[in-house]
Amino acid sequence: MPQALGKVLCKVLSMSLQAPPTLLELASRSLVRDEALEHSSLQDLPMDFFLPIFLEAFKGGHMDVLRSMVQAWPFLTLPLGSLMKTPHLETLQAILDGLDMLLAMKDRPREWKLHVLSLQKGDENVWKMGCGRIARACSELPSEVQTGIPGSELGTKPLRIFTDLCITYENGPLHGFQAHLLHWVRMRKQVVELCCRRLQILSDSMYKVQKFLHVVCLDSIKELDVDSFFHQDTVKIFVPYMGRMRNLEKFSFKCTNPETYISMRQKKWYSCIYAAHLQKLDNLREICINDAFFLKGKLHKILRSHTPLQTLCLKSSPLTESDLKHLSECPSTDQLKHLTLSNIDMADFSPQPLRALLEKVAGTLETLNLELCKMNDSHINCILPVLDSCSRLTKLNCSGNHMSMSVLENLMCHTARLSQLSQVLYPVPSSFEEGDWNVFDEEKFLNVSSKLRQCFD
Image 1 (spheres, one colour):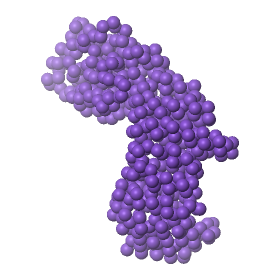
Image 2: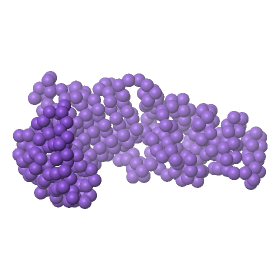
Image 3: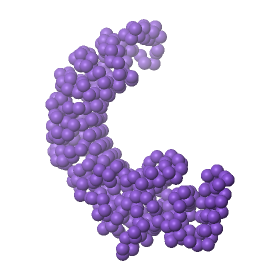
Image 4: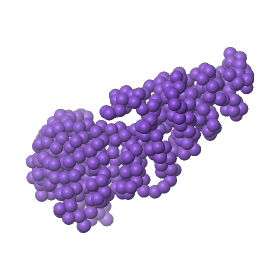
């Protein structure tokens, strides 16, 4: 052990008998400033010193110390993401440089314990709860590793890196951080595996998207959020990647509705290609699709899996009455907890398919959103008896529909019986809709309010 390091440790050990633990922080700062740390000396550091020194080096931006400490990291996991509130490229470079020195060794050092570098956001408090708490947290592998990723067993790769990724339109700190990480992993794919729990795509550049997907372990992706319109050629390239995300649990897709220039033939093509790959995903639990022009008349193809969904959210996407009927019949909607069918024109639909769907999920449904569906009195009257059976319902949104005062009163009386219901958004009665919104009729408002309050008395 170097002489400078020995002197500092002896001084701290003697002082710690008389002073509070904050002296560890003072000693850490002293060691970092004196640059008394070498890789060989780090192996001999007591744990009560190793972790405070690492934190001090991280917070103080002492990159040389960080490089050395990563090589001597004494735990299975390094949860770096919990320390970085914002992406910091220089810190990432120092950490990866330290890993490079390990990976470059022909024989794996006996003291090399690090299996996982986590860059995902985590509990920041872990690093503030003392050495014991930090040590316990770092000694555990992420749940994804414990349960195992198909086709990738622990030990086949010396190192796994876990991170959430966002493919953006523009360059910036996040782009530079991710670009450096992807390039580093790409050059070391034989010995490093990049795992991503949540992938967010905000760019329609297939070149950018493919650069990410060629490096990431697709089996590791559990949440996919696509918030960009994909042209036909883009979809043709992208969707097969999605079909290989075999552990995908949540799929969210938003795009601008291009009704004006997409032909019926193209819409059918989009429906078929999404259906072909979505039905391969046996672990899918949440589907959220917004502004998707290709759903109309095609839900029977897209929702063919027998995997029970917990969340189904369809917003601003044209549907047919037969689509709604399919939702009430397909096996994947048997256990829905959250159902959103908002901004979907049901004015000319029979109310029976919606009633059949609600009857099917009455025992499990917790939230129901039917906002802006152009529903009228006949629709509401038809589903009222079913709402009484939705005993687990906690949130209901019927706002933006056309409803008479008498039907609204009836709806409120029915929902008042649901003991779990904590939040409801009702529509404005049609008597108000027909009036002049620029003129507030206080007498009418007080009269309506009084009638509605009676439903809860």
